[in-house]
Image (cartoon, rainbow over all chains, first blue to last red):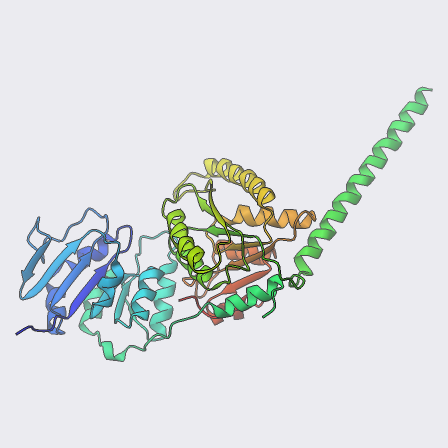
Length: 177
Length: 227
């Protein structure tokens, strides 16, 4: 019998976010996810030097730990397919990943990178968290956030549209509606 | 005789100074006029030549989303400007344009590079030099292209281009409209680029993607979100 997989996709985006990868590489977090019914963890770790070595044996990129499948990779050109097939995304707070996940209708926990110089990532994460579309957590709060996470309490996100801007620009340039 | 020469010199200097003051005043008045009395362009049917600055990363992604929805036949030919240090945006625009050129009528486009004014972590003194260089470069580029629309969404790379377009408009050389779209990541505070373009009244249209930002900055326009 094929049991349904419920996978968690962790993504740090195009650069690196070692604090996030380190927090995810924890047996406590793995157990918290397992108790929520998730069966696999896929980590896109970016180009940071830190490689998971707790939830997968050191030097391996794939393993089954306490019944949870774990794998990690640096980068993939098609993160969209990982996001779409995930049951939960834990992401850096870049606007691309955020909206790709929200518009795919996948539950999302964002972790803004505190090391970014001008940290407007926090702003976007908090705004969308206030609106109930996602949960925003600092790296140190991730475990608590996962333990209290309830996907059914999230508010679905309605996709935006460029049509309003297009109409304004057309009018500004003198094109008839 | 000698008195005469000195008097003539004095008169000359006075006239010269007078012209200079009058010129500066006229220019200042013209600048204030452009800053405060700008409205939509007159009705048109011909396409508008468009200069698009791709700011890298999330900026480029948002700009290409907007371009997806704009009528490409109206906004053509299109000229994309990318920072020399950004290897990703050029190919992304190229890929998107190839799709559009297939679907819409082929209207022409080009992609060119501009030196970046400041790299992350660059020192202050060298920043001044590179900023000056990118300003000179931008003034040349905008004069060559003479776009009717400059479409920008940050970050700092777009400021020299906007400054050039604004100065040429003040001088009456072009009628470029400047449209800025603040990033969706800015929910409560303006970015530095938005602050500059808003307070110096350089943008004809300044979009924000959150209603509360439009309440803080009344001349900013909320017309929905790209994502």
